[in-house]
Each structure stands twice: as structure tokens, then as C-alpha cells.
Image (cartoon, rainbow, N blue to C red; front, side):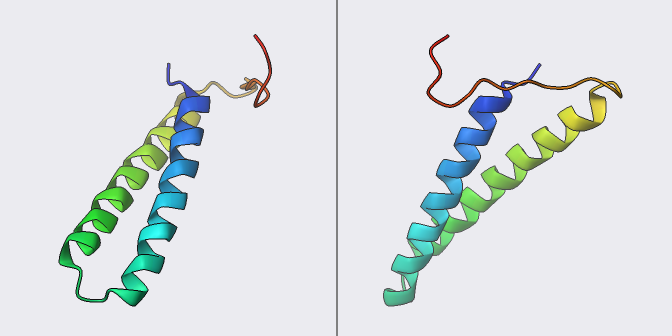
Length: 74
């Protein structure tokens, strides 16, 4: 079973990192390595989103996933 909370957190981190890289690219348009990094981050994001989709498709109907609250002490 996938750790959905960890995947969601990584997706949030990836989205923030992609946005930061894209802002930097706006001022450094010739940075080929930055473009390559953005593409790699986007591929990682796509893979994680596919993992979430697969998990949702394999979860039996009527089953709910309860995620812990962020910051909750467990």
C-alpha cells in the first residue's frame, strides 16, 4: 500500500520547486541545465500522480482512505 501522505507532501514540494525553477528560468533563459532539471522534476511529478491514480483505481468501492491531519501527533 502506498503512503499517500508522503506522496502528497512530495507532490507539494515538487510543485513548489518547479515553480521556483521556472521563475529563475524567466531571468536566465539560456540555462540549459535548469531546463533539464525542470523536465526531470515534471517527470517525477507525473510518476507520483500516476501512483495516486493507480491506488485510487485499486481501492475497493465504498472504502474510504483516512489521512492523518498535518501536524497531528500520532
